[in-house]
Image (cartoon, rainbow, N blue to C red; front, top):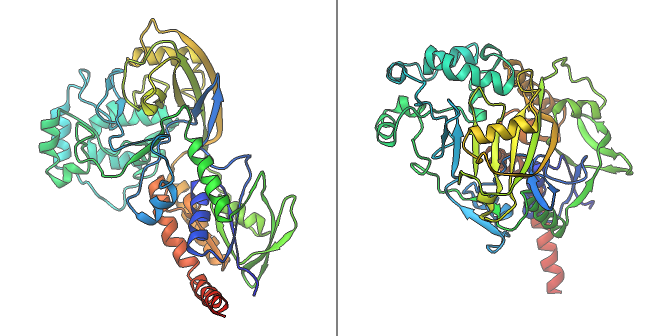
Length: 468
């Protein structure tokens, strides 16, 4: 009997987990993972500058509280090398360049917002859920009120993405941390959140209230999140996963709607029994020589990364800070000494900027000035290092057409190919890491159920041979 062969395309976290899970659940199958870059991880990567590792922005893995997921991804992390913490300790800058250190949710009760009472009154009578809102603009106006949309949501999203609220899909604000806001102190927010309607719109004033039991992870040693990916890479190799970097699919061959063979660039043609696909679905159709039946091209914003090291400690003890203030170009700031709990010079940070017509002219000097204005860096602190990097395939504009076409493309792919499983963002269903991992388990269990019988038959045969 030929050994069943599962090919996983794409070495981001969905592809890595799919390889680990498939091989542990079905040890007798052959698992091949391919990635077009020279390392696994996608955006979960790190680069070294001046002897210090910087990430591609804030990436802090978090347990899912599902044993079969967490045991694969986190059980091998040694305590002496890894910091495990429940409180993510994030802050935000949302209005008036005011640093609010107790939550990543936007704090909007600053001195310039003189209409908090009116905004809360609106939210107490708002329609929280409506299935047919035509755009994010309509949704936010009905949920939070026109005044808060004018003061905060519209300029914030315009700065971040370079588009108007009318161009964005319903609920897309949730994907960048704007689902709930803070409009008062801990006592007021705790009282208001007892109302189920307001609970959907307001956040606790302190992130330690209502905190999840999930644990966050980050290296204590002077390494970035790419260290985690390197450990997972090694773990996959030890399990017997075949990994090919700088490799892409040249062509799939099909028979009766099923992919039977794959030709990888630089490799021979090989038989394949199942394909797990984590890349854009349009590329799957192209690899199969078929028309994806779509002319839609999403707008993608590149992300510019500004890496700094400073001579003196930061003024904030937050692990990261979301920057929503429309007057700032920064999108998010990662403070590595706080994440690593390593407090000695040089003090490193990364500032992410989503590039659009409003932010394209920013420079390292202007970003450094923003760090001072937000109260993260002291004015007299000396810059020891500044490096710029860029992520070309960065942030998609989350228009209604983007979500509709993503789901439609995934549906067409599932209907067109019998032995395909779409994972991660390719599925059109999930976007956050925890949701991606949970969805992976459900999809893989369904797709690879046929190999349970093979495992049982192989184990039975092995037992019989051992007893002879």
